[in-house]
Length: 298
Image (cartoon, rainbow, N blue to C red):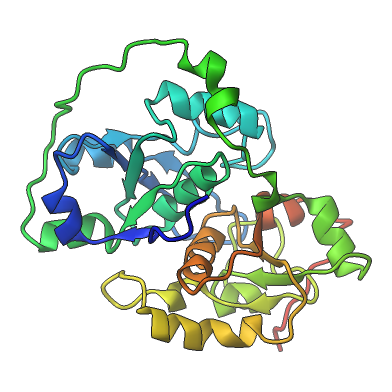
């Protein structure tokens, strides 16, 4: 897998290369309102937002349904990687093209999609600053779909031969529990805000708190006020305490494996690749009363 290609692409570069046939632009927006009370979990696809405006020629990818295993009890569940590769192939994504990903909320959804693509061997890039940066730069937007419908092809059937699956990029709750119990190496990092980590603010999930022995690294701290990733020097400064003398791999989680993906992107930007993401995160973990959660509330 090419580590030399930056996970990020600037508005200027995308504008310059918008007609490049090796690039394909995808809008990954999802709507997930802040919780008004504990357990207040509401999610909807970004279809309506896409219709209101998107980068010209951008296709919409639906993380809530089309690219999720909806048989699981938690949202955004990762399908088996072989199945995921087929789903991407039916959207016209192959390892031969470079997907450019953006969303309308600071790139969190784009980061999730970037990690999913990475796990089937596709090197995607995230539009740094997202849709707002594109708009603020005076770039064109569209409200209609100017792309033809994708033709059905048999590419999905042969996808196992063209995709390179990377199961190491994901871990399940059994592995997290082994790390909590000390029977397996790893450092748990929660990407949610400090108040959610501490259990002092309402949570979308079944119970407040964080997985025992976790460190807190809010994903939001890796972005600046405009929603761009901090520069590499700043990222190294923020991430260094989490990389020094800590057992690897770094096991990232949040509420549903979304904010954690922003941390994963930042780690790649500073050259750290020994990272895995707990897909179910707190949505799955908190729903099982047998699994421990810790709060720091006074």
